[in-house]
Length: 336
Image (cartoon, rainbow, N blue to C red; front, side, top):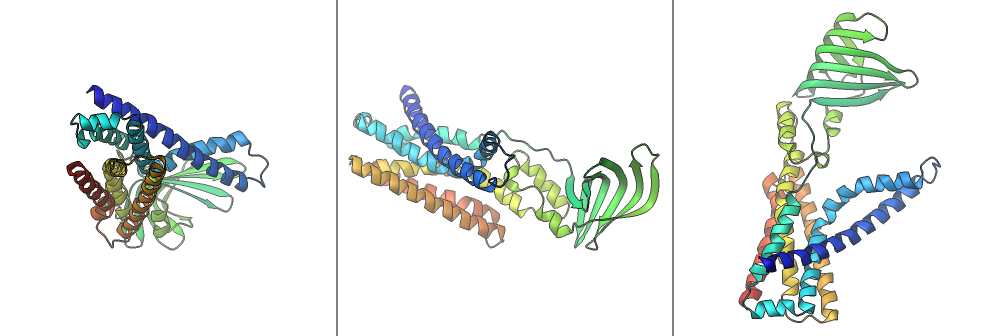
């Protein structure tokens, strides 16, 4: 137990240092891009742009996490090897799996942790028509072909200069690709005026069923805990939830992908030659391996979104392939 805690602390120190360095580089490039975009607008201060860069940083962290885990593992093992601690462990009969276990437990915990949440609360739409901003909420929706049926509809209209203008409540509505909402059993409420009732009311819109589906919440913005409910809402509404299913499976595979990267890091360190030049080549090889895994995961993700591959296969194949290769290599060096 003491040995596991010691190795775990060494890995966390290396992983934290590598992750901080990579995120610093990402933050720097994001800041440069924001400064370039805001060069023509003197109203945005440096601190405001820096805050925007920090808000974007968690999204970038998801992309670089496998690289940080692999390089952090290599650095941690190199520290142990440089101080001859790894040699003593091996000479004492400690197997590779015993000093890999603390790292696998840690990265599983890192991969599972996700504090964000999003509630399932119907469909929200927003559009600008002329000088008016329209915000539409429907408690339930149902799609049939190119027609969208909305239930428990609320529409809020705002004018650019004068603010809130009116609120429209309807029992149900229909959106076809003809540039109008068709609302039934409608009540229109304006400021300082009594409500007006309509049996049928037509309102202009620039939205279509296709545009609505494109503007649903991106899978990356939804917590893993909320995704199952989000998927149910999509499918009950008649929309395709393939992108969200793929993202959910990718999130489920993420902790195991990090474990596979730890195994890959061990493969680069387990051979006994630990000269300085050799270590630089090992880190370069690990980085190249990380890029290969990254691009392969992007290819399978694209194939999954286009329905060329099943969702589960598209999400899990990078993890399975990397994990099997890492396991095979560790078994080879351990037995050899």
